[in-house]
Amino acid sequence: MLYLQAMEYKDPEIAKVAKTLRDKYKKLEDKRAILRTPEIGALYERIKTLPAGKVRAEFGREVNELKAELEQLVRKSRTSNIEHRTSIDVTAPFDVNTPLDERPQLLTADQGSRHPLTAEQEIILDIFSRMGFTAVESLELDDDYHMFGSLNFPPDHPARDDYDSFVTDEGLIAPAHTSTMQNRVLKQYKSNLESDQPIAVVIPGRTFRNEDVDTTHEHTLYQLEGIYVDKGIHAGHLMATLKAFLEEYYEKQIEIKTQPFYFPFTEPSFEFAISCPFCGRAGCQICKQTGWIELLGCGLIHPNVLKEAGVDPAQYTGFAWGLGTMRLVMMKYGIEDIRHFQSGNLKFLRQFS
Ligand SMILES: [Zn+2]
Image 1 (spheres, rainbow, N blue to C red):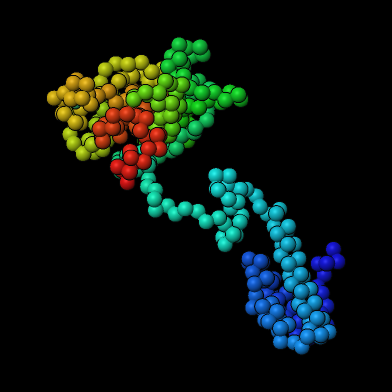
Image 2 (tube, protein in one colour; image 1 turned 30 degrees about the vertical axis):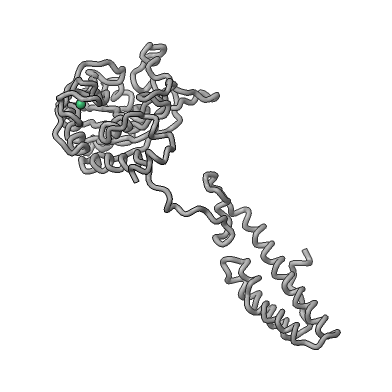
């Protein structure tokens, strides 16, 4: 590694600059900046002023040697930095370790805007946050236990067929509902109950269905799960919570109605409908002249689901719901086709920017 040893320069001026630059180099954060220092530039300017001949040639050779020495130092710093580079953000369109001035020029973001689902989700989460709910994001790959087992689906139960999603070669599931997070959230927040605080969590996330896509069906859906557990919680609390949220979201009074339904993880289970926010029950195209819109599934959390997460169902009860965020937003703006959201169609997106 002889070439990394500091060179000896015969010319006193160059020797002095070499010493200055070596000291400067040690303090530099961006080591490459040493190659752009004014001292080096001045030495190159100086060559031109010397009389042509041996002196000038010798001086020029030493200046080049000094430059080569500095380049070696910079190369060495890059090599020794490699061990410290731990992770690379693979979603970035360049290596994030690239110095700022070497990064590609990217298009500015002034042509873009937030996606309507992102913007609406923020409004939704803000309402629930003011109602005392914490938000936890759902996983986009999960396992059979969280998809079914922890939610009181017996093995081979036909109810599993209603959640036809995608499975990886390793057996992981692209979750068909955000309820996959119930067991985790109950476990994570059950200490709240011991200190007389409720478990109050909303879970926004993407869910996936093996679905033929049409105006009302998508393979990738945005859902919002809600979980609330405390002593003495009953279906009245569930209805009041959802009604309060929906009235704030739609900024108008609405009526609600429920009818019995079946989910393995809630008992009783309900289908939850609201009076059409467009026609106020008079009947219109949006509600197919019925005056009502079925919006979500909900119910009281099944005792087995609480038990599975270590929450005593004799002491605590709770409710849960799974809300289709896209459907909610479609109802708000009168969007007639669910496929618009993920179409990337600027004519659609720009109406919200
Ligand atoms: Zn209507």
